[in-house]
Image (cartoon, rainbow, N blue to C red; front, side, top):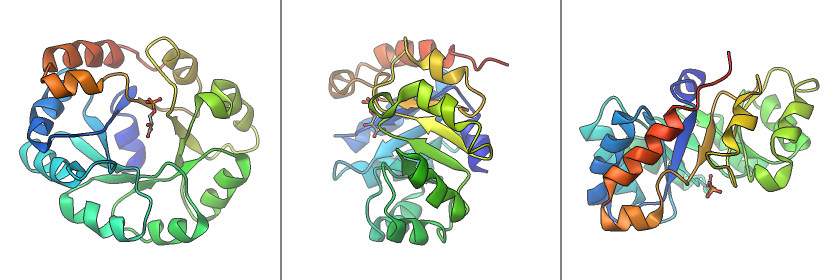
Length: 208
Ligand code: 3PG
């Protein structure tokens, strides 16, 4: 299930929402532009309401809950309607709880040892974060040999220009990033601008 979500589009927009009312217009603009999977970070008090609003109004959207840091947030985001969970990093204790979650989880890692620990707990698709400063596309290429069963969604420091170097790798189904949803555009309700950025991003097709 998680793999199919990650293959829906080349980019998962990572969004920090200040106004839950804007979330439906936002998700609509992203969907229209060809980006159905959206990560809403739990970094604002409005995040759960935004996840809930999108899940209810737009069944074609695949809304993920990001920045999940604590065990207690697992049931909160599931109740809100999240289709999958994303963490920036994954201490073993949290990973053990996540491995029992009722929805798919893409746990975060930044090192080979972390990736191996998560693989041993049954996770197959990991967030590589913060990607650019942790080794970037070169790191992902280097782990293809020793970690052939794992795929990664790199996020952190990626933009339209750098995304193709990640997307050309066979262990990268998609990348994540905030560049599609600038906070200013979100604040002013400029969904046309977000739609244009999203269309550019969805045009970043994976190399066959
Ligand atoms: C995340 O949580 O994935 C990051 O905040 C995204 O980082 P970016 O702003 O560099 O895309």
